[in-house]
Image (tube, rainbow over all chains, first blue to last red; front, side, top):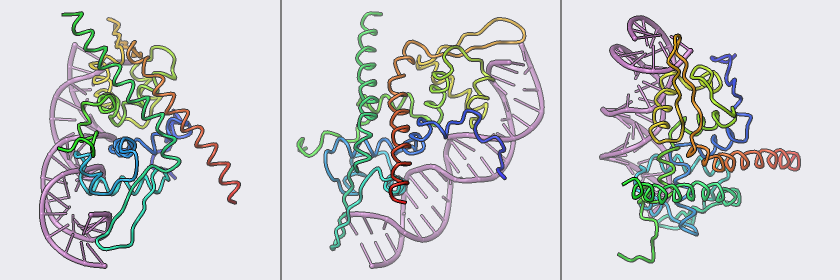
Amino acid sequence: MDSQSFAYTGDLKNTGFGYTLSLIGGKYKMIVLYALYVNKGPIRYNELKRAIGIVSFKSLTSTLKELESDQLIHRKEYPQVPPKVEYSLSEQGLSLIPVLETICNWGEERLTKQAHTAVILD
Amino acid sequence: MDSQSFAYTGDLKNTGFGYTLSLIGGKYKMIVLYALYVNKGPIRYNELKRAIGIVSFKSLTSTLKELESDQLIHRKEYPQVPPKVEYSLSEQGLSLIPVLETICNWGEERLTKQAHTAVILD
DNA sequence: CAGAATCCTGCGCGATACTG
DNA sequence: CAGTATCGCGCAGGATTCTG
């Protein structure tokens, strides 16, 4: 028995849209994916943290874990001292790049158009 | 600083990607936009709330306000009693549809592929 | 260096009541 | 009907410390 008998009237879960959001909708999910994307290649834990900046270690760790368990990223651990772990986009994660780029492009276009409009209106 | 090692310094705000996320990255932003999109036409406040389900009135209201102030949706108020307010995607909001569809399509594809894999592995 | 474990706080967000 | 206003709690998530 659910605490909420009508989970979704808008059956968001059953749509591809809702499914995607459940994977990349977290606060830092897309940011991490994007960082992995622009880095073009494996990146170490601390590097990644530094690259993103706004995220705490704790949040980064949990985000990475979720992304990994959802098969969107790959974690490679080198058995050595000191430890070395590299993260990279998995095959599945790579397939998300078009999504990331669409988002990126929309923002860039709107930024330039906005500048344009500002000039025109002024 | 060495410019070679990094293009992405964590200045997420300055990228198109970060800009887009600042507009649609909120918890319910994309869900609301998507709901407006699939509805194909103006939709009233309570209708929208019912369609989404998981969102509270408070969050819905604040989300709508932000989307409106960012020019992504349009709010039309009919001066009558009882009140009637309709929300719809603005021109700018419509330009986001490709983004929403990319997200949607990715999810649908992955869902079917997943079903496939499940069968194969089993 | 890459995390795990703890503690702790803000505020996100829901529930409720009220208004024009 | 479409919101505001208020209260309160739950927990996301930051800071810090500890370990292999």
